[in-house]
Amino acid sequence: PHGSIDRMAVWDLTVAVEELGPEAPPLSISVTSDLHIGGVILKIVEKTQMKKDWSDHALWWEQKQQWLLRPAWTLDKCGIHADARLTFTPQHKPLRLGLPNGMTVRLRACFSGPTFRTVMGICKLLSMRHPEELSLLRPVEEKKKKKDKEAQEEVYDLTGVPLTSGADEMTLSLPPTSRWLDSSRSLMQQGIQENDRLWLRFKYYTFHELEPKYDAVRLTQLYEQARWAILLEDIDCTEEEMMLFGALQYHINKVSQSEPQAMMSCPAMDDLDSALQSLEVKMEGESSSMDMLVRHFFILAFLSSTRTLRPKRLTLKGYKQYWFVFKDASISYFKSKEEGFGEPIQKMDLKGCEVAGDVNVAGQKFCIKLLIPSPEGMNEVYLRCENEQQYSRWMAACRLAAKGKSLADSSFSSEVKNIQAFLSMQHSNPGAASAQNDENINTHSLVSPRYHKKYKPKQLTPRILEAYQNVAQLSLTDAILRFLQIWQALPDFGVSFFVVRFKGSRKDEVLGIAPNRLIRIDLGVGDVVKTWRYNNMRQWNVNWDIRQVAIEFDGNVNIAFGCVTADCKIVHEYIGGYIFMSTRSREQSDTLNEELFHKLTGGHEAL
View 1 (cartoon, rainbow, N blue to C red):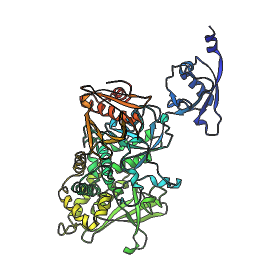
View 2: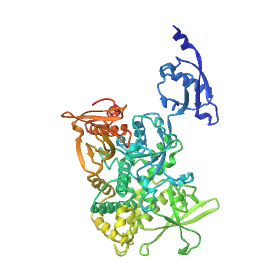
View 3: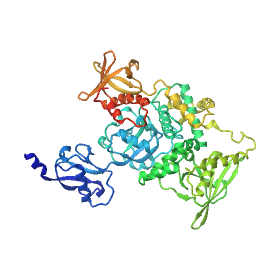
View 4: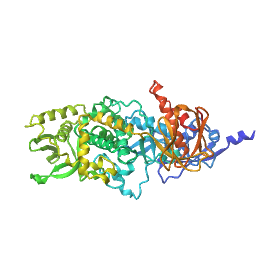
């Protein structure tokens, strides 16, 4: 038959290979239609004549926007002819990931598997359990941002930033629901390019087994996401609740500055050193941001306030403010926090240095004197700390660094305790020295803008401090858990809203999707018209032609609606996702049933 002769015909296939550089012309490879994808890849590799590990590379079909991941399929079976434009490209590429706390990390993510699996990989890297609760979304378009702002976008810690400093922090707001990526398609299929910026956020508000022992990172990020939802008024709460939220944030800031080791007591992270080393291998030279990330969670305090450095003149006036960052066994200092991502003014390696304290507790003087070896002899540097806690941590860190040990060393917290014990013996009258000047608390970062319009800071301060009295005894972890508890008890908690048009209705309405129910809301009045529970659902699917979601409930109740503000796949994925979340408690094993997730969220099969 003529078909088989055609099969044997030799023709040319065009393949672009990124490794050859942007200027290189695409390769032309002679193939037959019955050559399989694996064979095509072999030919490409031979033709490049490059010695390297190509195992992560695969073929991407530009026109069809799809990966060719089945090495045994022939070109014929894939439907590839001479007009196909293929790219031979790595499946894992760098991605800039905005975390709920406003920090950006750069890491390698999978661009070829379903987004659901990519998120699993990212969460594993960040030590976050239950990745099915999170997903990726496109960030809010940042307007008028010049390219040179790029460097400043890497942020450590926003706890001290007043919300009024412009719209930049506002972009940390919880996601408008329409920007979630499709869980079943790959990043490449959704137009995400190497080094693009995406946000990682909790999407499904059912948090399975929150265990402080194993979930230090997960709790920190969840707290940050909740905190911004409240500060940006994405969720309503009463004035009393707002004051309590403010007090808890105030307490959490305070405690995390005085006990960075509180977060370190989690056994999963005891082995931080080796965790960091294995990360560095994984990150292939991109470990620095990851390293910063891990430090951010466990040594929150080191970045919390400005350090001071003293030049040669010995007068007290000679102190100058600089921003210090401690990393590995070295200190770098910068003009200001904002510049802390560029080149430091100087980086000092502390290995082999001499460390001495110069302290007067009564006079509130906490200095550290460092003699740092250099080719010209010893450099003398004075660090002036703001208070006892800061002094204890920095002193401990310097002593460890002098021995060539990093902050992750297990002896760090006991060293801090020893120094604190030593200082406490110098207290002449307990309580007097540590009297707090709480009058100047920064209310802007603690309550939402509406309360600053309503009250002056000096009216807010006593109210926040009053609420603070009731939580002041809580440990860092308990304070975070309490914050999350109160957040979860708010009436609107966990509801994601979409504008929809119900079948047979003439006007737009709102559909609220909650962890256990759907809510129909009148857009004009804001009243709940009807509620349907998932456990009464019999089946649901999408008519892709008219982009309509149809659901059948017990007792012959049928509803159907089209989506106005978001793709109906996003809405469908929310509903199916919550039903998937409810199956988890029954699953004994730790393995996620990925297939079930896609089945429930895909929009094709009935239950």
